Length: 145
Image 1 (cartoon, helix red, strand yellow):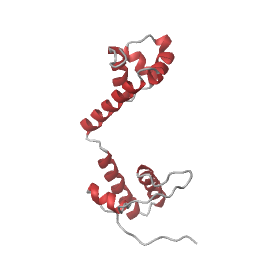
Image 2 (tube, helix red, strand yellow; image 1 turned 135 degrees about the vertical axis):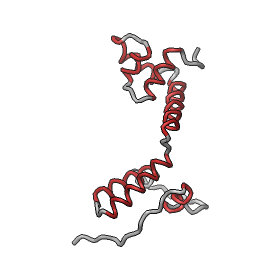
Image 3 (cartoon, rainbow, N blue to C red; image 1 turned 120 degrees about the horizontal axis):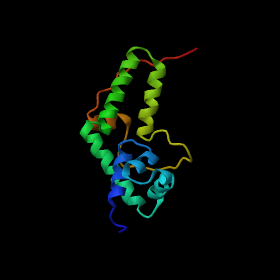
Image 4 (spheres, helix red, strand yellow; image 1 turned 180 degrees about the vertical axis):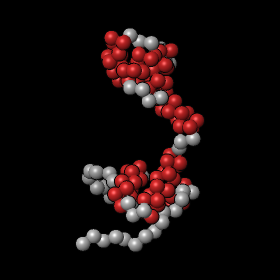
């Protein structure tokens, strides 16, 4: 049955989605401990890889929703923390938060630059407006001599 997960594969997916390591998830699912590494590799790379990955993603999404953690709430919290760090003049913290935000928004991709034209205006500010996120406090730029 390659189109459906077995009971053990489902239990593995649930355990792994909850944050356990692959080996611990294999053991929790009921597989033998002595073969846990090999079984874990097979589960994550075998014939049912896509089914297992979908189940893990579904379980993680369910867990996030039950905890009230969404991408939007995390971004809003990062912006709030950025504003607090900016007010406290904690520039190292500000830089770290901006790296996280920029990475999440795909602003800092390494590699070859490719020209791609869009017919819409996409900016950090527009994304934040669409999310109804708190506004970033504007401060004058700091220069270091």
